[in-house]
Image (cartoon, rainbow, N blue to C red; front, side):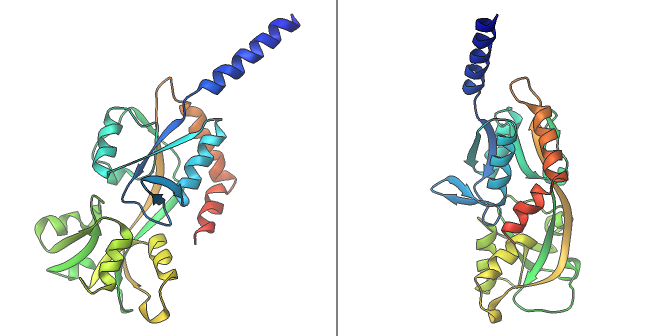
Length: 241
C-alpha cells in the first residue's frame, strides 16, 4: 500500500512537471509602466508582475507572447492564448465567447494631455484638432469624433512615442492613460512635464481566461479574486507609481 501511494505521488508530480506554461498575450505597443519589452521579450512592468504572479498561483509558468495588436485579436479567435489581461469590454471587437471575464483589477483613466496646464477641456470642443493616439488603441468615447472628422488621429507606435511627439510640438493634445503619463513625467524637468487637461474615460480593466479543459480556468479566476482581496494588485501598482 505504501509503495502504491508513493508511485501515485511520483506520477502526479511527473504530470504536474509536464504541464505546459500558460500563454499570455503581450501587445508589442505596450510600454512602461505597463510592460517593459526588450528584443521582443517581456521583461518587467505592471502586467509582467501581474501575469507571472497569477501563473505562480496555479502552479504554472507564464509564457508571455509578444505580438502586434492585430495578431492578438487573431490568436484569441483561434483560442491560441490562455489569458489576456489589460482589457475592457469596450475595447474588444469580438465577443470571444470561449473566454470568461475576471474581476477588474484596476481602473484606467484615459486623459487628454497638453504641454501646459489650463482649464479642463472637452474634446468635443476642439473641432479639427489633431490628437496624439496609439496605433491600434481603441478610444470608444472619441470614436464618433474621429469617424466624423471632427477630430483627427495621429498614431504613434507606443504611448511613450505619442507623448514624445506631443513634447516635440507635433500636435497640441494627446490621449494618455494616467499611469503612463505619470511614468513619462518622472524623467522630465519641472518645466517640461506634460499636464492632464481633461478626462476622456475611466474603464475597469480585467483579464479574460480561456474556458477549455487544458486551462485551469476556475483556479485562475479564483486566484484573481484572491489577489484583489489580499491587496496584491494594489501592491503591484504601487511599485510603479
